[in-house]
Image (tube, rainbow, N blue to C red; front, side, top):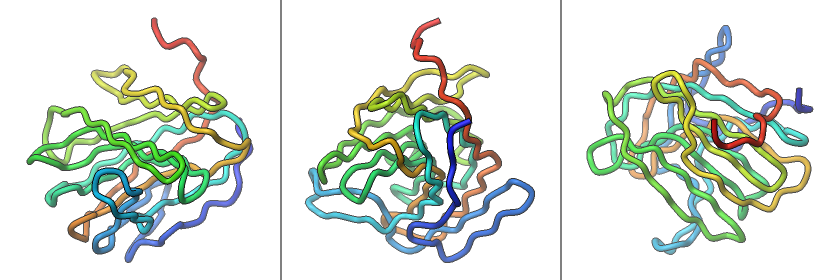
Length: 192
């Protein structure tokens, strides 16, 4: 099991509760994590329930928010500092859900998206694995995890990881995280 530190909020949300392993969060107004690229602005006010983690690990997160407003998002994050981080999860854009990954290196964000089928409030499970400097992002699809992205992020041995959610143009997204679980890292094999 990776070494874990005490959980804490980076940018606490207006409302949150944790009962029997279920975390419920309501997003604040115009919250996001994004640095400069394309839009020119920097936002570092999204909600992140951070756990200090030392060494390699896998983080599995299951969540189900009722998306309604452009760019509403929920998922997970790995953070080195405010200029180097990765967030991944489901984002509401172009009238539907997309699996989204943003990697920010040296204060510049990128963005990749993949359309998802299913209802707007369907439950999603993702797995984020750290392998030294590599971050592996997977989504559970028909009972199996499939690779979405393999990304580079220069990281020290200790980082912070955990659930993340934002409402860049609205507020009040109610996210229920039914699973937030740290474990040993997945094996490095990418293919069956």
